[in-house]
Length: 295
Image 1 (cartoon, rainbow, N blue to C red):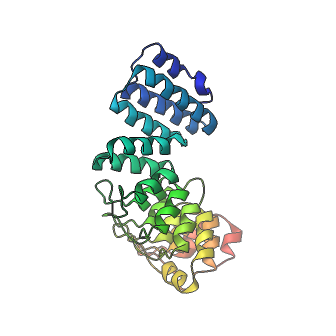
Image 2 (tube, rainbow, N blue to C red):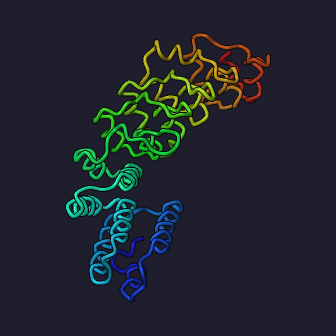
Image 3 (tube, helix red, strand yellow):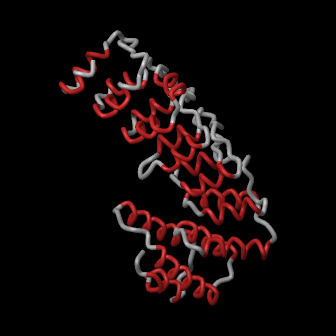
């Protein structure tokens, strides 16, 4: 991506190659591979690339679909041109169709394009009751899934519910914990606004603490820091669908750090699981004298 106005795609378009959806999809896949390989997404070069591409297309194409593809690409590259394209097209057409708003808004959320999302909300083209996909995921669910911290905070400030659930019973907090990879900004934002860590995801019977055990200890430590004692006591005493409290789940998983993190804060210690296997058996299975000394 770090080739800006000298990117080979520009040479193809300048030479007369049609900028179709297949070509743009291939380009987006290239970007994704670079990011997955640890390469940085250089916004400066993305801006230069799009500026040059738009100038080229002004001379070669007036296709409305190309404008849409450019907007999608600008959102993907997280460039300031995305907002310019949204406002420019709104000025020309007056408003977008429902499906187009859905697509633009969802992409703006996914790629943490706060200004675009805010512009659509401000102009009334998108609303917070707006639902995505077949599981009734709300914009906030989508934002935390993609760890779009800035858009998540914007949606919360606009009144998005932090307790609304999908048809699978996933609250935004459940979703944030399940998908978190890089940082815990979305989790913090949700907890700061009153998201419940004791709420149950109905298909598994797990609450946020059970899910955090399956993620890593830094999420558990964040919950311990943010959640008050009363709610924490309730959540840590709750058994999931398999009959495990969070601390017993950590012991069964043989996660030493998670177990140690939760053990001292669990007041109602579950000594056996529903299968009759004792907590001490799981702890012995960790093969750690330090952990065994906790009991």
